Image 1 (tube, rainbow, N blue to C red):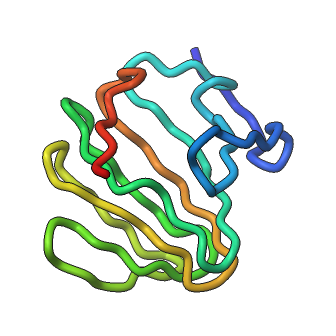
Image 2: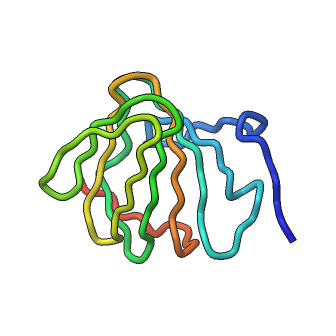
Length: 117
Protein backbone atom coordinates (compact mmCIF):
# COMPACT_ATOMS: atom_id res chain seq x y z
CA UNK A 1 0.00 0.00 0.00
CA UNK A 2 1.03 3.61 -0.36
CA UNK A 3 -0.22 7.16 0.22
CA UNK A 4 0.42 10.07 -2.13
CA UNK A 5 -0.36 13.75 -1.67
CA UNK A 6 0.83 17.12 -2.97
CA UNK A 7 2.08 19.34 -0.13
CA UNK A 8 0.53 22.43 -1.75
CA UNK A 9 -2.90 20.75 -1.74
CA UNK A 10 -2.80 20.14 2.02
CA UNK A 11 -4.68 22.80 3.97
CA UNK A 12 -2.32 25.14 5.84
CA UNK A 13 -3.20 25.35 9.55
CA UNK A 14 -2.29 27.70 12.35
CA UNK A 15 -1.24 25.93 15.55
CA UNK A 16 -1.94 27.73 18.82
CA UNK A 17 1.26 28.87 20.52
CA UNK A 18 3.45 28.14 17.46
CA UNK A 19 4.37 30.78 14.89
CA UNK A 20 5.05 28.78 11.70
CA UNK A 21 2.16 27.44 9.62
CA UNK A 22 1.69 23.66 9.51
CA UNK A 23 0.83 21.45 6.57
CA UNK A 24 0.07 18.11 8.24
CA UNK A 25 1.48 15.62 5.75
CA UNK A 26 1.05 12.79 8.26
CA UNK A 27 -2.63 13.55 8.79
CA UNK A 28 -3.20 13.17 5.04
CA UNK A 29 -0.98 10.11 4.48
CA UNK A 30 -1.42 8.28 7.84
CA UNK A 31 1.99 6.60 8.23
CA UNK A 32 2.38 4.17 11.13
CA UNK A 33 6.05 4.63 12.05
CA UNK A 34 6.79 8.32 11.38
CA UNK A 35 5.23 11.77 11.77
CA UNK A 36 5.87 13.95 8.66
CA UNK A 37 4.93 17.64 8.40
CA UNK A 38 5.80 20.72 6.38
CA UNK A 39 6.25 23.95 8.34
CA UNK A 40 6.08 27.34 6.59
CA UNK A 41 7.89 30.25 8.24
CA UNK A 42 7.88 33.98 7.65
CA UNK A 43 11.19 35.77 8.21
CA UNK A 44 11.92 35.93 11.94
CA UNK A 45 9.40 33.26 12.96
CA UNK A 46 10.65 30.45 15.15
CA UNK A 47 9.35 27.24 16.59
CA UNK A 48 9.23 26.67 20.34
CA UNK A 49 12.49 25.57 21.96
CA UNK A 50 11.78 21.93 22.71
CA UNK A 51 13.01 18.37 22.98
CA UNK A 52 11.23 15.03 22.71
CA UNK A 53 10.70 12.10 25.01
CA UNK A 54 11.12 9.52 22.22
CA UNK A 55 11.05 11.08 18.75
CA UNK A 56 14.17 11.86 16.81
CA UNK A 57 13.58 14.43 14.10
CA UNK A 58 14.84 14.77 10.55
CA UNK A 59 14.70 18.26 9.02
CA UNK A 60 15.01 18.93 5.27
CA UNK A 61 15.08 22.58 4.22
CA UNK A 62 12.84 22.89 1.16
CA UNK A 63 13.27 26.66 0.78
CA UNK A 64 15.09 29.39 2.67
CA UNK A 65 17.59 29.56 5.52
CA UNK A 66 17.39 28.96 9.27
CA UNK A 67 19.45 29.63 12.34
CA UNK A 68 19.39 26.44 14.42
CA UNK A 69 20.18 26.00 18.09
CA UNK A 70 20.82 22.43 19.27
CA UNK A 71 21.83 22.34 22.91
CA UNK A 72 24.36 25.18 23.32
CA UNK A 73 25.49 25.09 19.65
CA UNK A 74 24.19 27.45 16.96
CA UNK A 75 24.58 27.18 13.18
CA UNK A 76 22.75 27.81 9.89
CA UNK A 77 21.02 25.43 7.50
CA UNK A 78 19.71 26.29 4.04
CA UNK A 79 17.84 24.85 1.05
CA UNK A 80 18.86 21.24 0.49
CA UNK A 81 20.42 20.73 3.94
CA UNK A 82 19.32 17.79 6.09
CA UNK A 83 19.65 17.79 9.88
CA UNK A 84 18.85 14.92 12.29
CA UNK A 85 18.43 15.66 16.01
CA UNK A 86 18.24 13.02 18.74
CA UNK A 87 15.18 13.09 21.01
CA UNK A 88 16.77 14.50 24.18
CA UNK A 89 18.57 17.43 22.50
CA UNK A 90 16.90 20.82 22.95
CA UNK A 91 16.37 22.50 19.59
CA UNK A 92 14.92 25.65 18.05
CA UNK A 93 14.81 26.97 14.50
CA UNK A 94 14.48 30.60 13.46
CA UNK A 95 13.76 31.54 9.84
CA UNK A 96 16.28 34.02 8.42
CA UNK A 97 13.96 34.58 5.43
CA UNK A 98 10.62 33.12 4.29
CA UNK A 99 11.20 29.36 4.40
CA UNK A 100 9.67 25.86 4.18
CA UNK A 101 10.86 22.92 6.25
CA UNK A 102 9.98 19.22 5.86
CA UNK A 103 10.11 17.53 9.29
CA UNK A 104 9.84 13.81 10.02
CA UNK A 105 9.61 12.62 13.61
CA UNK A 106 9.96 8.95 14.46
CA UNK A 107 8.47 7.03 16.11
CA UNK A 108 5.02 8.48 15.40
CA UNK A 109 3.97 9.71 18.84
CA UNK A 110 1.50 12.55 19.35
CA UNK A 111 2.30 15.09 22.07
CA UNK A 112 5.88 13.80 22.50
CA UNK A 113 7.43 17.29 22.50
CA UNK A 114 8.40 19.03 25.73
CA UNK A 115 8.53 22.83 25.40
CA UNK A 116 11.40 24.54 27.19
CA UNK A 117 10.40 27.91 28.64
